[in-house]
View 1 (cartoon, rainbow over the protein chains, first blue to last red):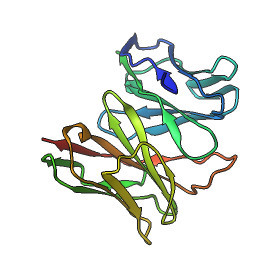
View 2 (view 1 turned 135 degrees about the vertical axis):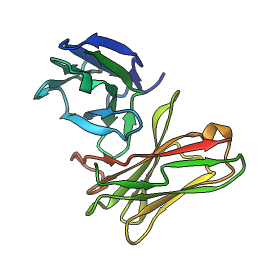
View 3 (view 1 turned 60 degrees about the vertical axis):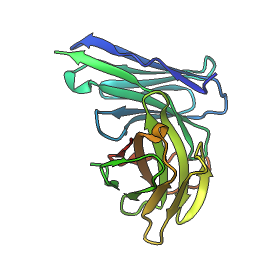
Length: 110
Length: 117
């Protein structure tokens, strides 16, 4: 079993839709939860970071962590074609070795 | 632009050869990380250096090695290349690399695409 599981997609949604991206994990030692966005032929860039359980909101993006279920989510409201990218979750234990999910490809149709 | 630079952008080589990938971290960042990204494996952590010293190791093959120089740039050396080594190689940097209960954002470079024929 992989430490982090992420649905690879692709996920196609119409512009304006609410998008839900998810990762599940098996290691209860993870404390740091991040979402990266990666455009085609570019390096990943950090979107959201949360520590421990709870929600964090930043504009149209909300990150949610449920440590009891070992489940993290990223919600994108009012999705735009410019949100079309691959979204990777990354989890860390407190050292700087992050475990990344394989990424979910999102396409927002105009 | 993250401020992390990587050269070359693309590299095409043959099996059995050796290549060197170069990374310059953001100004002020002391820690450098190397990752391999392939279609089926996703982003895999290879190795981390902090201020010239190896700090953490991931799934790095014995044929691969890295170092961080006094000016903080880093090189990843890949030798006896195999077809399966074809991938995107990313470098990331962060301000510190010390383990502890604090978050430290990693900034990624644009990557080097390696093709082994």
